Image (cartoon, rainbow, N blue to C red; front, side, top):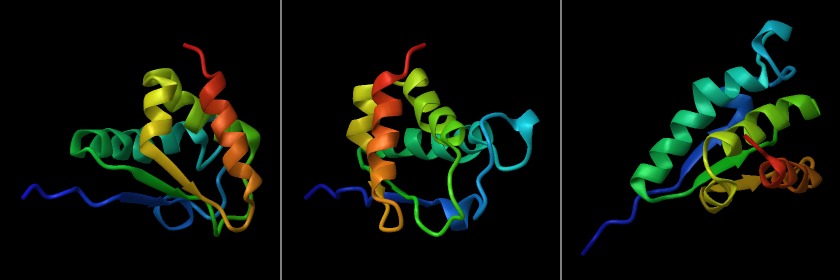
Length: 112
């Protein structure tokens, strides 16, 4: 019997910051660029390799700049095909459910 890999999870408030910043590292701490390179991309590639999904828990932070979300999730879709990204990523946001639609649009609209 083959074993199915367990879903991976990123809780942004716990694994990154309760105060996500702006788009780029040079604009301050906890940027979308930093989140993409340090946490999101490695976990995404791990989930893809293991054949599982990656849950992004968006709750517990003070808020998100649109530039943070676009750089992190749009940036991931510029590195990997948007369809692949949406197949692997799942989102949870009880605090702001509309964030999921916003992020999905950044992924779908990402261009290299």
